[in-house]
Image 1 (cartoon, rainbow, N blue to C red):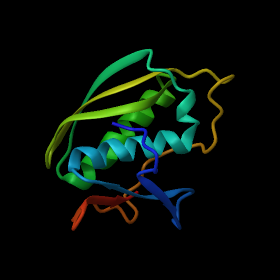
Image 2 (cartoon, rainbow, N blue to C red):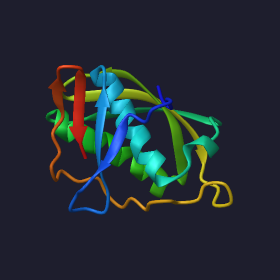
Image 3 (cartoon, one colour):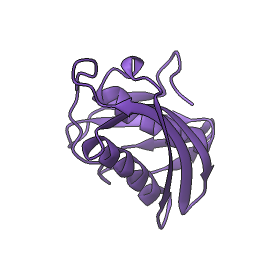
Image 4 (cartoon, rainbow, N blue to C red):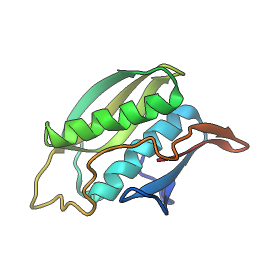
Length: 139
């Protein structure tokens, strides 16, 4: 679950508007940290209350597709459902599916300034992979 003192991601040079390198000690933590990174770039997550809880399920062919599908679903919830999130707990994850609990609230422009508008999650340079210290991805 996020947030943490040291951010679990860093910005990188990317052909899209924003690219991030995300890490996690476990695969569950990697997926939670990737979601945190997206919303942390989108707005000040410290201003997001945990007023609403949702369970999200996504399926995909492999881990790379699962990452894009997961983040795309959260971005859809923001764009269409006008909901911002700041807490992410991945309950199950393997090569082809993910189940997570997310917490947030309705987007309030007065409190949730959009810092970086995120329009899509892309596959460019995307690779979910195991490292000596856990897991990492570039998005």
